Image 1 (cartoon, one colour):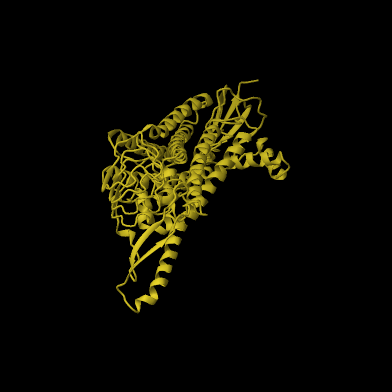
Image 2: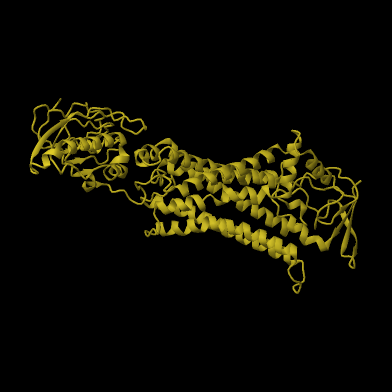
Amino acid sequence: MAFNGSEIAKLSLKGNVALRNIHTDAFVGLKSLRNLDLSETSIVVLPIKGLQDLDTLIMKDTKSLKVFPSIYNFEYIKEAHLTYPYHCCAFKFPAKHDPAEHRKHEEFILQINKYCAPRRRRRRDDWWQLSFNNSNSYLDEEGHFHDMVKSTDTKISIMCGNITRDYKDVNCEPIPDAFNPCEDLMGNWALRIAVWLVAVLAIVGNLAVLIVLVSSRFRMTVPKFLMCNLALADLCMGVYLILIASTDARSIGAYFNYAIDWQSGLGCQVAGYLTVFSSELSIFTLTVITSERWYTITYAIHLNRRLKLKTAARIMAVGWIYASAMAALPLIGISGYAKTSICLPLENRDTTDLLYLITLLVFNGLAFWVIVACYGRMYCSIRGGQEVVMPMTRSDMTVAKRMALLVFTDFACWAPIAFFGLTALSGYPLIDVTQTKILLVFFYPLNSCANPYLYALLTHQYRRDMFILLSRYGMCVDRAAKYKGAIGGIPTAAGIRVTNQIKRNTPNNHRGSVLTTVTSVDVSTHNNNVARMNSLGAVQELHLVNIRPNGAVPLSRENSAGRTKYCSTAN
């Protein structure tokens, strides 16, 4: 009771950064207090005893106060200048801010109406002095953040028939804006269900890819290595979505009560790091995969110039460093994850933040165009071996459709984000956070869901590895036996006949279980395009088309049959 008996209309403790704790009875007995300024202090709890007559409360730049007391403790408040926009949500939605205190307030109103009802008939203008005890703890059964503050006995002067107070008329700043709305983390149930569905698909699909590829008894190849990196990156996106969805689930109906702790806490920082790391590493890996495919198909005859596993590992190390750095910069003050509830780095305060956001957009845009260019060159390479007058074959159509699907998923993922990101950076945002959440659920993680299916799960090589892995545990033995028989090499899918056994793998080739020492191979040039089309699978185990084995020399060309025979000089 430091101010007991004092008459102070305006009290300012502004700038006392060392002020952390104020006794719960510090303002008890203080008369006529109308204006209280606690800006730029470090208080954690705002005591409410003695503050019921306040007109104006000022608490700017007081970031340590994350829990705002029930607004029903301030009977006459007209202005509130606070630190967080979410605190102003309490005045707009008092029932959600503190349901327990709101219920007590409603019960009190009912009691007053019941008490005043018989007197209204006699005299409508009677004034009544009523007291009620309101000293229960603010801790309610629903786990809201009011466990550290206790209310006090208050006396309310009312006129029967006009006893309600509309707190929505209070002038509260900062006003909840597009980045910090009073709505739930996921704005509606459609988004809420969709984000869980997308998260589960991303996690299950990418885990399946990782488990099968890592457990495969075939040696690690460049495509498999790149697919493992892609699956790991996309798995992080699934974990990010799970963090967002679980936070939404535990804060349904009153997110603004949890928002400050979530956005300024470790959870949002981890979620933000995961999403940026996942996005950048996934884009980098997709670019490397596409470039490797383009080189393999375009220069298929240069067997010894293929991308080696060590080189691929060095390239991916650069990608990991880049993705980790871009994800870590918001943690050290460049942009930030705490700006929005979905923990994306959307903060743009100065030139450094602007450069960071532009770098993300430019890198993603360049990567997309590299992917488009590589697929275009690949298709031209596949069609290049045919006469111009020949119509498009069924295999060409299959290749075109597959490439179009890959490019479309990339475009659908990055184009909306790039467009709306550029408009926001230019100072004219076209969508708010509510609409951004639609991008978050339906576009942003699209690649993370689609990649494992487009690049691995739907390919012949993945199914082979999966059935062979399952056969080790007694499942799908017959299917695995068929794939193992195909690996023996007598019939192959591209019309290639192998007459002798494989002796060893060439050390310079890391494309998988590849035929490297061959006595005699007949390659049908008619099936050349089919083999190239098959090479679009992410994990290739057999590349024989247009490949001259080490030591092999052409013996003859049978133009009429369209075949070229090679004979190995190896023993």
